[in-house]
Length: 307
Image (cartoon, rainbow, N blue to C red; front, side):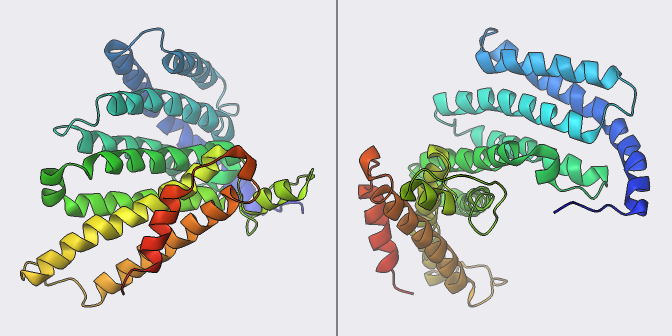
């Protein structure tokens, strides 16, 4: 179906683009500084940093063109790709260093904020365009996947640190909720409820995977990551909250039924994701030998959880 843009909206686009142009240079300068900092900290020949440097050169050239050419739809995909490459290098550093206790929490928050920047730029442009329209499916999916996967890796590491867990349970819960949110959102872009692409199916298994929104291993991993994070939320965060309640240390401004509602949220989302993961792995992808042992253990936990 053809899209319709009102005369008022068409007139607003140049004004919005003009406002957007004023925001380009500080954003581009910030990205260049980020690249420079990473290049000092790592290998100058790192593939992702090299790609980012080339993309930033293209962005610099684009910014020199007449204002009518340097539009949001041309600038933002390149900006996002450079951002993804640079932050991927930074994330790998964190993983390789096993998320240092003294600095990783702040760094993870900063990376999540950086990976949210492209969507903020769309909103700030005031063109009434949606991020999906400007960025495209793959880039937007990648932004949500990267945020969700980073939070998964961070939580996977810090949940094993007893002292950290005792002191920062609220931070863990916040990151788990955010991680689940990002991955559920990412999985929703191509689900059967949100058809955006047309495909010819070679067989029934392919059709089933497409209907479930599974187009790659990443989509399957996202389901399992969701299930695991929901499991951790119930196992670590709610247990700690119950202990605080029993000792009278629970915050008085918490609504009486908040624990119950949070348990349902983690449980329902986690059970749904893990069940779908198992069904797909033992159905259409059975010949690919995806491991479902941990998924079944977590599913059993959800199904026998007292509420």
